[in-house]
Amino acid sequence: MAITGEDAARIVAQHALGGTPINRTETGAADASIELANDAGRWMMNARKWKWASGARATLGVTASQSYITLPADFAEFIGQPTQTASFTGGFEWVSLETLTQVISESPNASSSYFLGALSYDTSGAGAPVAQIELYPTPDTTNASAFTVFYERTWFPLPDPADSTAAKIPVFMEGVYTATLEAYARGWEDSTSPDRSPGTRQAYLAEVMAGEEWSAACRRDQQQQPHYGVIKNGLLGSRYRHWSRVQSLDAPA
Image 1 (cartoon, rainbow, N blue to C red):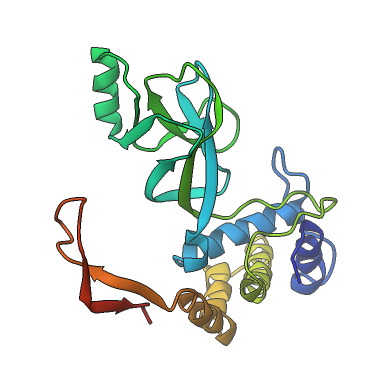
Image 2 (cartoon, helix red, strand yellow; image 1 turned 60 degrees about the horizontal axis):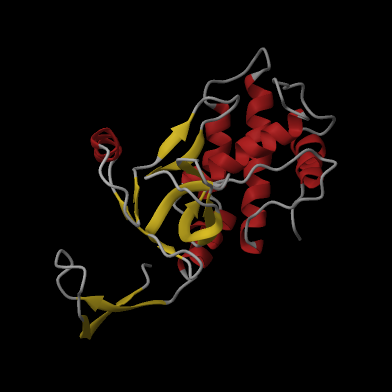
């Protein structure tokens, strides 16, 4: 069963706290329960490097006269090298922000290559910084599907309870998320009571991680891909490596 914002609010209000949602409101929060639901989701994603979260794929476009590409809202980190699509003839290369700055200051002749800098963040707007890729040279044409990238995802925020959008997690993670949300909400509620105990929320979350539901989800997550193919010779060698047919690498246990 997919978990929506409405489901999350109900879990907080009825199952975790036994009543109405707690009074935890901040600027821009449509509902205190949804805010807690997103806090719990972010904690769950950060508590472990989930394999299922490492397969996100996105098509990124370039915009004329815009020197950056905005990354997906659930972006955490890149996996491998982005590749250009069939509709885009320009190449690109990863460089550090320091190198990118130097190249821009030296103003070399523009070529067909884009120098993609290290990950940067736009902090000019309200809210959390927005992940983006700096580009040089600045594109002079627009292409909505220039690059294909794979990346590790983080928690994608649930909208307010009136929205039917479901949490972007696998079915086998729904029980873990529900348990995490209940623990997170109970811990937050206890932390606001006059007789609160230090570390209460951490204790609740530790119980979740020590439980069989968490362990079962970890085992299921580790079995997503049973085999990783043959091992490459010369891990630190050139980019044109040959494949070894002698030994193969199984998925981690």
